[in-house]
Length: 200
Ligand code: SF4
Image (cartoon, rainbow, N blue to C red; front, side):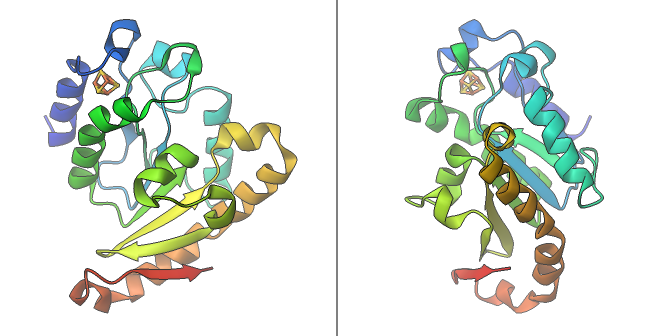
């Protein structure tokens, strides 16, 4: 069994916050264990809670389309959420829930070692780009400790708003060049504290 599968078993037993009482299934995440790109959304919705898989409802189908636009599918990337259990009524995650659940995401990132972390929506953005506004920073990236952090709107929000839809589709198309650029900037390993903000 892989370390990631063992981690899933640990997450499935987690009772650290109240959301455990109401979940049908925990939704740890899925995808390639050695993925270059990790997409991080907010929290499971109804479909995800039923299936125990991330992004399987309408927003997930849209995410699949977005991935296809850069010639990827979900088996080639890793997809997870900040919160592993569904908040009742699809309400927004509470700060305390995000804090409790954060350790699981951190361990996933530690095992996968992605070259690029793409935040989907403002809750996952807040973990990696504190005190920023998604309307201002979507489509821009930071490089920290040799990982590219890239903020995008959440597919669920973009599904229903034409302006956001255009933005998320354009932002997705920038990912391949960002990743290629990241690989060429090897010297950042020697400057792990340096933040590099760049637009593509
Ligand atoms: S949401 Fe996270 S911290 Fe809360 S019970 Fe589920 S796995 Fe545990």
